[in-house]
Image (cartoon, helix red, strand yellow):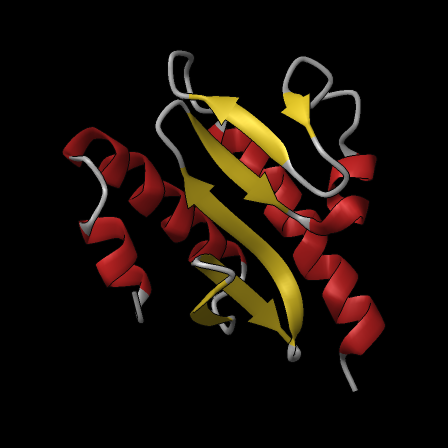
Amino acid sequence: METIEQYIAALPAEIQVIAEQIRQIIKKEAPDCQENIAYGMPAYKTFGKPLVYFAAYKNHIGLYATPSGHNHFSKELANYKQGKGSVQFPLNSPVPYELIQQIVAFRVKENETKYRK
């Protein structure tokens, strides 16, 4: 897959809706972000540095906001399965779009502070 549109189009219809909603949240919070596919999933950068990634799986949506994004929201993410820089939102529960928006907004500010010249 070469584009995010192709990635989303290849998903089952009900998951396409979720993936597109997450994409729109990211683009709203980071209107100048660069979108591409990296590591086989939608990837977003600001100031040339990773912002967030997401991926759709059979039973969950994975959000990868680097360890800092997850550490900052550790209390809010406590009920979700996590890895070092990832969190899994199960598809059999409502997707926490507002929390995703807050995490993306945090990462946008973080990249801006660190990398804006």
